[in-house]
Image (cartoon, rainbow, N blue to C red; front, top):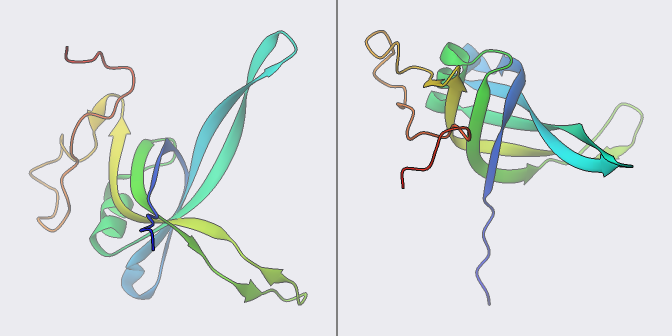
Length: 137
C-alpha cells in the first residue's frame, strides 16, 4: 500500500483571531489568500478565506504576537469535522490544523523585535518568508 501525506502550507493575511477553550489554550484564525484570474483583458484578484486552528504553544504565540492584517505562513494538515446543524443538515467543514507558523509584519518577523519580553515557551520565528526579498544567490 502506498504511503500518503496530509500536509498543507499556506501564506496569507490574518482576518480574525478567536481564542477558545479552557484558559484560551486554542485559537481559530481566518487567513485570506488572493488568487489572480483574468477577466476579459484585465487581471482581478479573488480573495479566498481559509479557517485554521492552533493549540498549545502555537496558539499562545498567535494570541501574543498576531494582529489582524499581519502576514502569516502556516504549516499543518487538513482536518474535516462532521456534525448536524440546528436545521438537521449534515455539515463537513474543512480547516487547517496548524503545527507551525511564522508571523511577518512590515518586513520583520514578529517576536524578534521583542525577543527579551517573549515568554521562553514560545517558539521563535524561523527563516525569512518575505516573498519580496531577493534570493541569496
